[in-house]
Length: 129
Image (tube, rainbow, N blue to C red; front, side, top):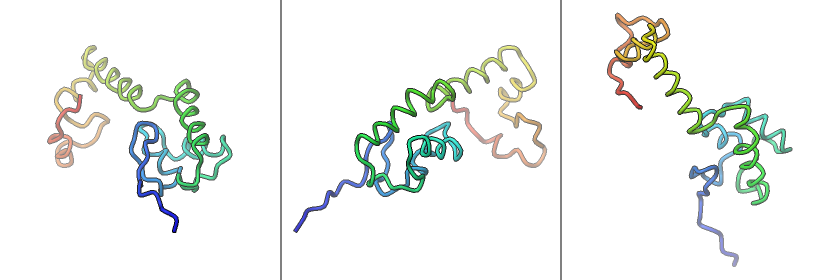
């Protein structure tokens, strides 16, 4: 009787993911990669987006990691680089004392949303950075 590996999770791009998940959904879990870019990565490497991770070999997974870590960061920001970029943009708005920066300082909605009745979530939200 053959033994099955009981390990269900693998580390994929510094995230613990289930082997049984589709490649497309695993790529979308990375901060900064959405539907379009995840499908683009799959087709660029010749994979179907709905292939499961357990069906990929280690060298194929390394190709995906190389493409997302080395090639794509030149064109898009992902993970910590994107978070740092957003944080710096907010800090800049606060430092020049623009209206958006003032709204960020007061923990109010920034992009023109109504604040009289609908801003309860934003008002209760704690600052992340």
